[in-house]
Every structure is written in structure tokens, then in C-alpha cells.
Image (cartoon, rainbow, N blue to C red; front, side):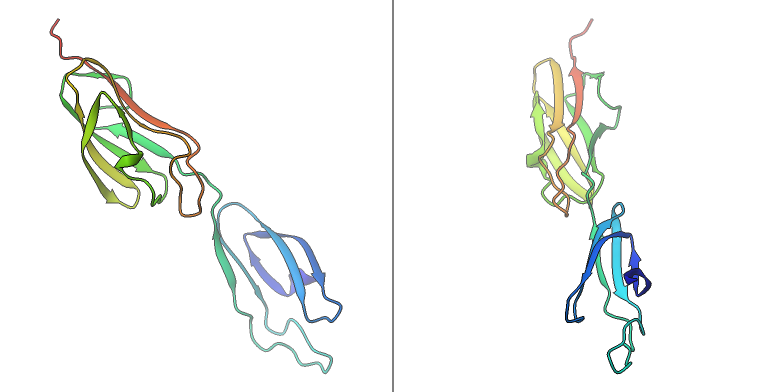
Length: 171
């Protein structure tokens, strides 16, 4: 069968057909999970009517399958969400699960202040400083769902929020 002449990595054969001329073979595969997928034809796998076989391995067809949505995490140096602070600024880190070229400080939605400093430290890590407005109460940094994409065009499925209470009133 067809699978005896192919090397297939990360795929399952779901359908195949041969042309009536015998010159074209068509195969349909489904990926098994994310990652590198490859297909190639073995040497000496086919022969013509005179008995001549293909002497070399075919070229390798390969691609990276990515169906996973990127995720976003926002943390401060102190804690995750729900803490109290009397400071007028807060340093925070945004970590993406994978590369997302369309992520920037414009992706952030802030409440109760503004981002005064925002730097990309690595392919998926950003650091910033949130400057609080003078008002007391809830402050937050938010990334909405479906606002960034990875290099395979998968949207972030879940939102991410860092929130805290700004309290500068003495007891």
C-alpha cells in the first residue's frame, strides 16, 4: 500500500487515490497535534513498466502545524491580581505563550492610570511600568480575548488581567 512507500511523521492518512494514467498519486493526511510534519517517498518505492525504480528519496514536504491559541499572562513583581498598593507606580511583566508579532503596548487596556514605559525583552516577554492616576481604587491592566495572533494566525482565546487596589489614605 501507499504507506509502505512513504515516510510520514506526525500525520494520519485519511484518503488516497491514483490517477488512471498511474502518474499521479494523491494523499490526504490529518495532523496529529501541533509540531513539525513531514512526508517523503522512499528510494526504490516505485517502478515504471520497464522495471526501473526511483533511485533516490523524493524531496521532503514539511511544515509546522500550529492550531494552539496563544495565551497571555500579566503579573507584577509583587503578586498576581487582588493586592493593595500605596505606590504611584507598578512594574509589570506580560508573558506570551508564543511569538505574537501584533502584540504591543497598544494591545493593553489600562484603567486608573497609564503605561509610562513598555519594552520587549524577548520574543514573548515584555516589561512595563504602570503610573497610577491620583484617584483611589481599582487599577488594572487588561488584554482582551481575540486581540492578538500567533504566527499561524491563531487568536488568543482568553483574556488576561492584572488588577489591584490603589490606597494611599492613612488609617
